[in-house]
Length: 353
Image (cartoon, rainbow, N blue to C red; front, side, top):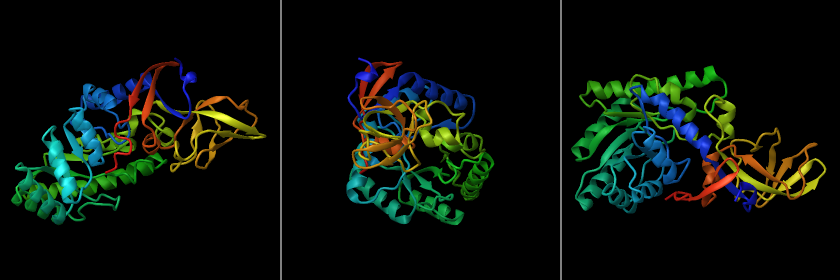
């Protein structure tokens, strides 16, 4: 079976490129004190996580508890849940997963600490936690070094295993201008370092200082206080990162789609918002300058110009954002060249609870 035999729309994963991207990032971190803890929110399949760990990753980062549970069922860890969870049901799920794999949770307030404390009492075991610092994303995270120190003390008094801190300079990772991206990332990392310094001065030196994303992996990966980097998108590379960091690797993921209509300069494909997202800009047709300029539920509009696209043509589209596009699908068609060699379930698709 070749990829042209696949019914559409469908996700195509080029395993040769995936392995190249994993190898390149693994080699970058192999000889430096900072290590890689890749994000699971991009690939969402244990097949990729296994390969990343085999290439030297020290663990996996997850965004949601559902992702943690997928990794726990596969026996893959250690895992950092780099997000807050709330409510007894989720806390109890956390401890259930922590009984299967090494797992670290994230806190940013006394509320989180108290919930983990109560969950530990129910589970009969302590929880490992790190503290999130707001380094510029303005979502969650402590805002001052004093707040971070007090939260670390509270976590220890509550019987939690305080492991360190994390920050995420996500507002910097996709800044197109290189110098502006570096400046924004350094400002965020300087903020994180202020919290690290305060913790050290208080006798609470962090074992883990986690930061970084694909767009800033080499900035966070050179920052003295940082111990690990949470890059994730590098493994597939989407349209947004191809534009911002063309040096990082080749896109490994495409959406195979079929042209169902051609009217003048407009071609219509069978992929709409139910199979493709565009929040980071127009998706591109692979190996061309053609863009998907419109998406409705079931249809996509391609500015086809004078191209030879006609009904029945199959085209590969590079999503502008892989993470959200992948979340719409249940499987990858894995290829080497044009040959389909496997179908991998996307176990963590829609694992948003």
